[in-house]
Length: 247
Image (cartoon, rainbow, N blue to C red; front, side, top):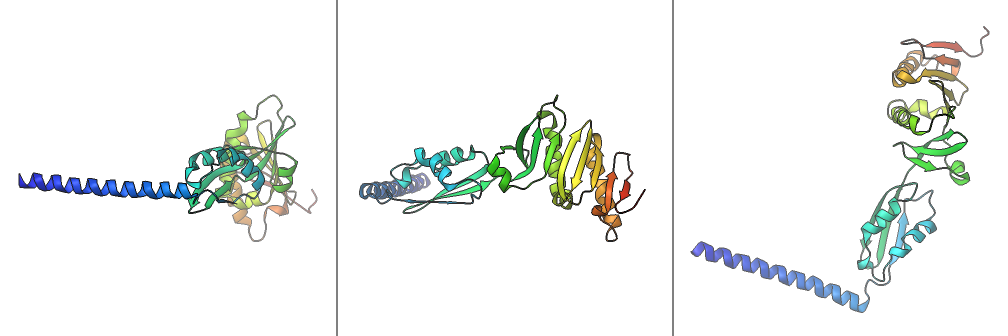
């Protein structure tokens, strides 16, 4: 009986403390609203390099409220993350008068062209609109699909796998890549040094692994720029023709 009484007393004490804390918070919040403590606030936007700050402000303007405390941060995040070129958003408050919005933008990795249509792709395979401004800002390799009878969706999986492979496993290949052409089951790669590389689409990653090993083998006496073309289409073989030699 004594233990039960002690438990009840402890519960009532904790309950009373919670009520006091809640009432205090409510009173402070009500007082802050009444005197307009959070009514005037600044908006600080960071992380955006491609998207204009003015455009971001226009998007979030309908979500702004008279008080910093009454702004729904989740709504701001969802609204901005629906925009092209924005991958993630972190919105937070710094009391008493600052709203922080940090933008993480998507970065194009390839410029895709098929049937006279042009679009960017990022490393996750997300398609991004390409226009005169974005093409001028993002100097990325161009990938052309010379098959007007097939939709881009047919190739997206293979292109995404290729991009993720070279960025993680073979970054030097991407660094020197200027153009990719896909046609009739063959991928043609053109380096900045005018070396042409042929690979078959059915085992593309295996061929690129062979090319990576070949490049390590000939280094430092040779690198890929010393070859006019490199053909990987014969399984487990690398057929080359060097530059600056006749025949």
